[in-house]
Image (tube, rainbow, N blue to C red; front, side, top):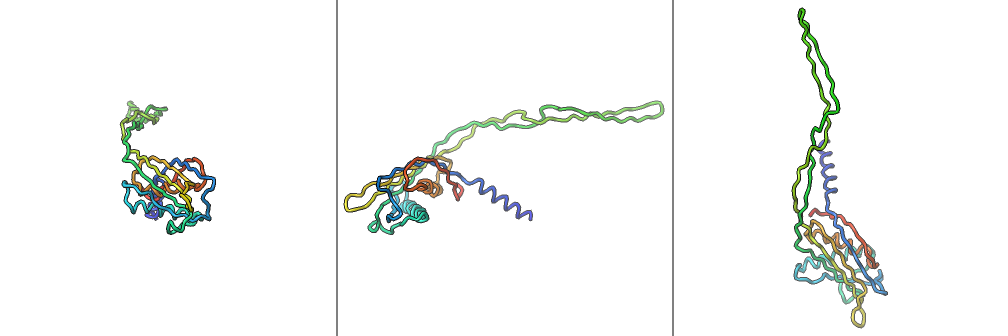
Length: 217
């Protein structure tokens, strides 16, 4: 029974310690917006900073997310009405310093005292012993101060939507996302960034969003 309780407690702590990805999202749409009747082909943005398989993983995550929302995902660009190009990036991080004060607790005084005594008589001699007990008060006795360091990573993402037709493809949707935090592993945070970036797809607007990571960073 004790082992079961410990296991449950550990699971609770693990869920509470998951990383939160906080993002700012801004999106724009054309007068002929993307609809659920459109066949959407999704492609990862080509960049030398990320491997081809990682770029493909972005497209797969977006495709799965949009499919779960009822959108039709095309298997190739020739059979699509809309082309979505999506990409993400993260910098090398910036180290920042911060100061901290840790309070130290102890006895700061006494709220009162009580005295008890005993007496012992031998013949004509009486001995009296008394004992005084003080009631302590506890509080902050001081602080341990210091300087700590943390690394903050800036994460960005973009999506560009083109409507295909007989002429030149037209831009009908665009979005940007920015985020910063302690996790610099793009492969870990990209699922959360995808959810935030496409949360209100394809509506225009600006909003802040928090997504919880399933994997620790």
